[in-house]
Image (cartoon, rainbow, N blue to C red; front, side):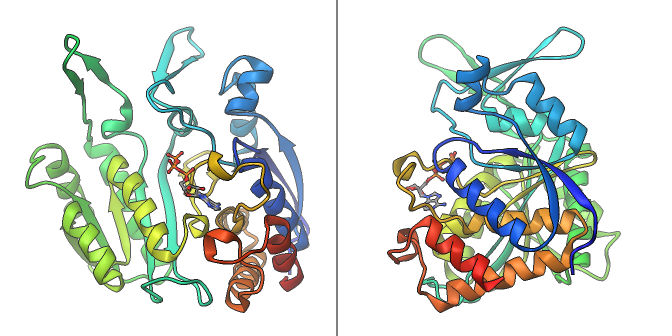
Length: 349
Ligand code: ATP
């Protein structure tokens, strides 16, 4: 049963395959019977063309006002993606990429990425079921880089107790709420003694308040090995920003495709929902993108709106279509297109 509320939701179609998978996701979300007022706004290349800036003030204002958004992926150009945003007091802040700017301007702090394998999808690990909790406000991704002459470049890695404790508190609360037993901190504290050392220590400090949960830690290199050999040993995984970015793709790969891994960016006032993958320009416009990651991000959005029943139905419909195996997109080894897979999920609903 859907509630009888109408939910305002901002939609950012995004770049590359973004508009295709966003349209697919809206069709599925509407098929649940939940009602929405979609407010489309632009970011990325479309915003640069229309407004002369990849992240216009009106986009940020729309999301802040509504508090919830469904977002397609945005292109992150290599080496040239830095963007500057004017603040309310007239000062300017420069961010390393548009995705980074969006997360930090909206003050989200946790990027939650549940990655699991599905019956019907080839994966070396049919029991993969990991939730990545990526801290998204700091680490090397603050973008404080500097050339020290023509042949030397420096980057600052920033870790604070405040942000680290916040992500661990969120991870433990999430784990308890979702019936998960173990939280693992990923780090490289044997080399980065101070920064990753502080991150790890914050994990231990927060874990002390959750005696019912198992807490352990693992060096990020050993974690990669564990994920590709015994992923069933990993449950909720808390990572600083950069490792979280990298291990998300690794987990998507071992689940069978990047096109299966959804994501939520969670803050105190604003949350927005996006697939773990990028804009996939190599397949954009061909109608063959896998929409499942964004559809499952839509299920996370429904949970956030309090529409748990509809969320569960979307997950079940997606899982049954994958299991049936008839409407798989090429990334999953099939020959179906985005529209056919979407139609099958709507049909299953
Ligand atoms: P970013 O750095 O912005 O996250 P990326 O460099 O990791 O992006 P992606 O855009 O995620 O790259 O694409 C990586 C590969 O995965 C590409 O070959 C792309 O076609 C494929 N891919 C990503 N998402 C999907 C999807 N939804 N359906 C099918 N293939 C996908």
